[in-house]
Amino acid sequence: MRFTTIGLLPIIALTFNATGHAAQQAVRAPQTPASAGSATAASLSTGYVIGAADMLSIVFWRDKEMSADVTVRPDGKISLPLLNEINAAGSTPEELRVRLLEAASKFVEDPDVTVVVREIRSRVVYITGNVAKPSMYPMIGEMTVLQLISVAGGLLEYADSKHIVVNRTENGKQQYLKFNYKDVVGQKRSTDNVALKPGDTVVVP
Image (cartoon, rainbow, N blue to C red):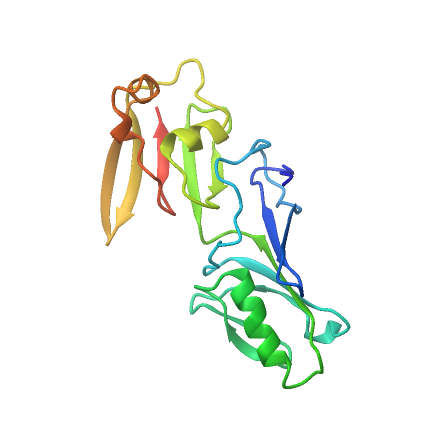
């Protein structure tokens, strides 16, 4: 797997072709002021579940009129020429590919489709404050606070490493989880190194 940074947010493409095998590659990221680094904390897996706001490329070989770049709507569906509305959220790219094949087989003979996750927007976390590269980062799999700090280039010299906070909103209520970097690294408070959830913001004072 190869990661490419072009701007603030590394974007990973997950491609499924007609054989059902996954091919992974980096794709162009939106231009933003800062660099997000050359590595992410979690590897892209074939089990990635598509969510609302994710950007997909649906490519039908030999049937370009059916191909489109689409964004998953809040209701979890995408709209495609001829096929109309297809449920996408909650499915892996491979599951969506199979669903598209079934739908397209009613209109074309032996359809061949590729599903590409171009931008992961449904699963992102944020880190701000005294780190080398404060930014928004995609969550490909599970990511801990320590891993996010590493992806963001580490703490700056004057960061208050003992009073890092994870801001989280659950069921409409704000939560503040404390994180002591030195204690976690020194294996004194490993419980502070919680698994992040989409939408979490890590604040490094």
